[in-house]
Image (cartoon, rainbow, N blue to C red):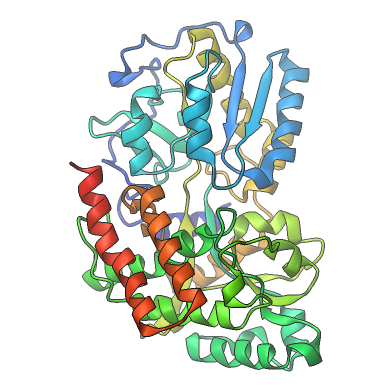
Length: 447
């Protein structure tokens, strides 16, 4: 954990959390739990009389979370229910569940939009026992009044995952890839020889709800990050406009992925391809994904590695991985005080119990808590190695996308049109969705 903290520290400038901090105030020293402007009293309930309902954000972690919930119930007698939202449906699931009489007591508020929408439902976590277990404030989210709305329970990295064995079968080495030009050379050679080799370059790049976030959220981050980098700043709030100056670089990588893939670009809109399985079964040498995939692929490809989003930007030989989080715990301020107390006790147990934290770290990657188990995630080690070598970390500027669902929906629509016909005119629609769409959604969110 000591070395991985370097990634955490360097990936956030100042007190910037990877989901839009309103400020870096807030102590974790002693005191009672206050709900800030939620209007509720301090959480003075009896944990032994309460129960926990965790609405989970991460489908790939469902099996582990069910195991952890059972462990806690067996140990304490407290009922813990874990419900996992399907990929791409968390916001609508949360809205639906919060309307029920037995609403989630533990849920995710992972970015500035979430703070605005759900902040009034969040207990102020300042001075709680779980907050005292944190080893950093970097991934916490505050509202404009300084209320600690949610706290990061893991941080992650994303980029391009590579199977080094397949590269070697094709006559290349991982060390050959140092920038976009060298990546392009390797990728296009493998795709050209796919029939001969028995595998292709990239896995499918589907644009349905289960996959499009890889390109409209994660890959889009390279455009936002390089705007930040050129300006010499790190966003601490959503800017009203973006320039789109680095859209040609986004296009470089996006085109490389969709045109050198198992699936034809015209097939991507409807989805239906399983990129994870394609990669694990060695049908492709590259996939666009994150550190959360490590647990599911380590047995099949134990030496898989993650490399940066090379896209043709000057100096990108010193790029590192995208590090940050949208995984931030919030406690329902509308729940009963007994349920609040039970939820806070469960959270503390998750990050201090040796067996539980080991299970959680194995599925989440890294948990930023003093007594949590250390991570064995190789992709996070890759992130640390890049940082230790002096490479810059790409922070998650994408978390500032305004009206995120509406904004990304317009990007998906424009990208689908482009994938079907890769004309200059259709790329202009993508540019409009990126740049004009940002201004439009910012105005809508701040009207």
